[in-house]
Image (cartoon, rainbow, N blue to C red; front, side):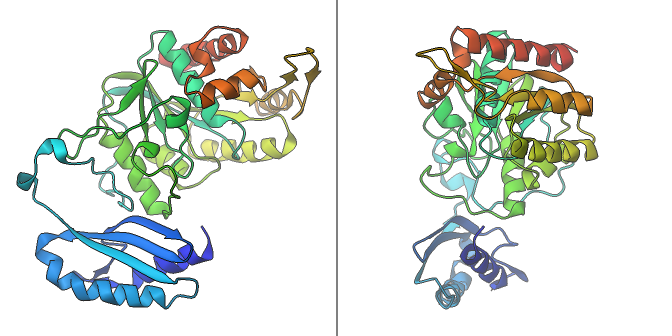
Length: 360
């Protein structure tokens, strides 16, 4: 998060509102956007508070525009209508930018889901999301009832890789009907926000979104929910490990040292939170030229296998750096949906997951 974003959020936290709290702690900010010096957002309140907030909006605009780097503050004041004033079919899902978590919730694991498996990585760019979606599709091909939660809040990519567009339905304004593709039930923050806009959230907002996507989505009866985590060891990972009753986690890394260093940090976090590390996967393991057949180890080879052996953890397999994987993902049809050597590799890894967790 850059310094201007921090200044804006600190400013909003300083604006007092009725009830003795502030704009952030009362969870009133929606659709916050900061671009080219212009700050835009919505303040959402109850109908009964409209007159009280008119001077607050003017004061907030004045204070924001006094911040160095802010040229203009555009604030829209909206009020929530009572449920009886609007038809249930017209109400959007209550997955709002800035919503804070309900601290009273002790467990985020839905009763209808048998197992939740996290797929993580120590750093970005190692292909974690690609592995997640192909594992989910491969599980569905084997007849497993599977869901995929895209919890990579800042960089949701599952809608693109599954060819899904549009916004999920909400029959009552509270529950959310997930989308589906290739036999996989899917939910992503990417369905709920403009894909061209950056998501600017603090930790509590991330935790709130995760809580909503687990608790408000009608997942149905699932054998397993695959969770595509953000890279690293941040708030989303911590919340999921502490409150989602994970059956285990899979770590994805490329074989190069800089990736393995961060992968070991992710494993250390999981160990500290008592989450079983089910297996390690080496992605972009090697490259075979489709024209001449020459094999090159662009990111090295065997590093993840060696590290798994040192740490006494299962090694689940190697996925090559394959043009077909990239093309199929960009086309919205993961490589595991088809046939071929790469699809077979994912099927082999998927069977390890079934044997170690799902069939138990």
